[in-house]
Length: 154
Image 1: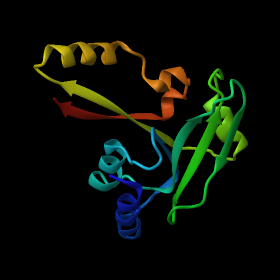
Image 2: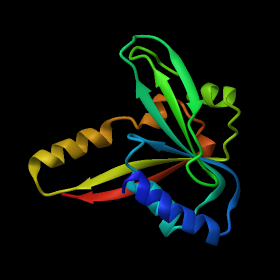
Image 3: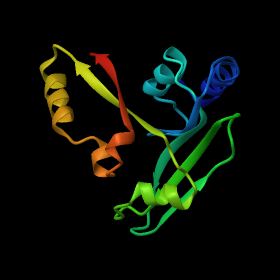
C-alpha cells in the first residue's frame, strides 16, 4: 500500500479505535511504501498507539556520518523518523532515538515466511531463514520487540 492510501485509512481508524498509551515504532524499508505487517497490525488487529513512529534508514554515499531527525507529522499520532547513515557506519539505533527524545513502549518489525514448491525459491527461503533479522544487527531491546510474520506463497 502506498503512503497516501495508508494515511487516509489511518486517519479513519485513529479516530474510531481506542489507543494504547505510549509510543510504538514501526520499521520501513521504503518510506513511500507501507509494508503489509504495519497494515495488518494497525488495521486488522487495531493495534494503534497514541504516538506511532515510522522509522526508515537512508544510506548515504559518504562512508561515515549519522544523523536522525523527525520529518513532518503525517497525521494525528503518526510521525516519520529518518536515520541517515554512512555506508560504513554501524549505528546504535536506541541511542539515536534517545537523543531525539523517543521513549518507545513497543517496537514492531516484519518478517516474511516464504512458502513455495519451486526449488530456486526454496533455496532463497532457506537462506532468508538462516540470515539474522535486522533487529539482531541493530541490537534492539528484546523485551520491546514484536515480530509480525507475513506468509508469502510463491
